[in-house]
Image 1 (cartoon, rainbow, N blue to C red):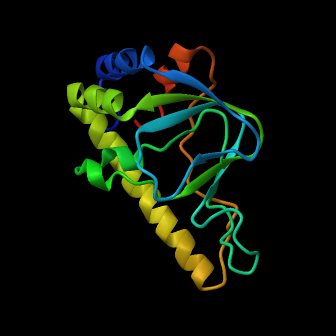
Image 2: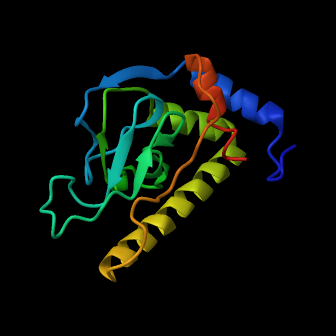
Amino acid sequence: ASAVGVSQEIKDSFVEQIAGRLERRFYYKDSMIVKKGANATEMYFIYAGMAEVYLDHPDASEESKIPPVARLKKGIFFGEAALLTEDPAQAKRNAWIRANCDMEVYALSSDDLKGALQAHPVMETLFNAEKHKREEQRKAHQERFDNGGGNFRRGFKVRLRTLGTKEKLAGLVTSELT
């Protein structure tokens, strides 16, 4: 078992359940992958490319624009926070995410994520801990900007190890949560 008490068997079972449910997607440079305030229906795993996370619209005027909260690279997952809400009506995106280059991602639907988490409740605890950590980082970033300071180029990142096949990508999702 890992430090947080998640056995390898549970992690492997969770990964096995989501691996076959991932859907491959492509986004061109400057595509808006996630739009703040939109209904959330899936989360994403970056297989290739890079994106930036913004608290305000990336095309806002320079004087009012908050710099990106984070740069998301190969091996990072995102979009899970809105899927973890208790009330599906509240499942709204909390940031803008734009592709910095052509990207390949794998999407996991809300229903598939919830089914896997229902079958593996300890994994839900880990995802919720990551959600809380990211919320705190977003708040701190906003406060630093509001107060005129801070390093805006650093943000939240959840890195998975090296990526390979679709199944390996899914498998690595849990490695960084433990």
